[in-house]
Length: 67
Image (tube, rainbow, N blue to C red; front, side):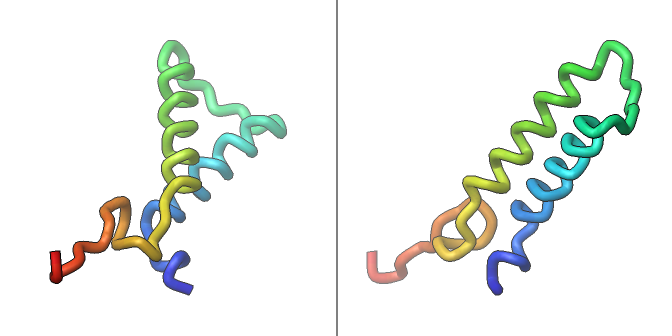
């Protein structure tokens, strides 16, 4: 359940939902910024997928105090 408390996961899910809605026909007109918008959302989705909260909080790893 630790995974659901992670901001990276929710950022990835939210970005995926927006991209999926656009795929199914919801029109979000951003003009000349549309490609940048899609690239940013894609990066957020990948960051959410690659995130592993069992190794630390957010995107940082746990620090071993013995080291």
